[in-house]
Amino acid sequence: MSQFYLDTSIASIDTSAYDNDMLLFQWGTYYYEGEMGRQFCLDVTRQFQLEGEEEFWQLSCSLYYPPEYDALGAGSCWSVECETLQDWRRGLNRLELATLANLLPSQVKIILSAT
Image (cartoon, rainbow, N blue to C red):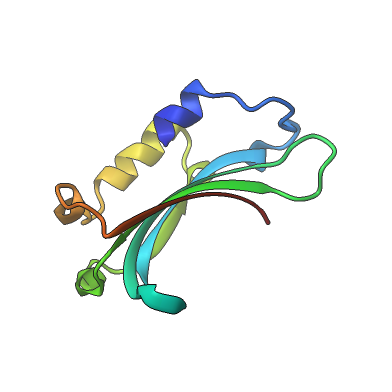
């Protein structure tokens, strides 16, 4: 998603504020209603605000794994918390989530929604 963020501009983004176009990485074990139940989730979200709108939009890619990965903990990190996007990516690479790198998720969801 970070390369998509760099390569793909979104028309009409209000650039007057630094946080009107940013990335969020979040992970953890959560309970989802319905058949999914308890799952470990990795999620990357691009959040942006278009000119003249009060709502933010979020484009999310979520990967779901069995809950036994709960030991990997939970957390989140916004790209604007780092000086550069490269620093943000370096920080994510230091997380203890590498055990999931070669596993296929049980489910993948890509969602565009307004907040």
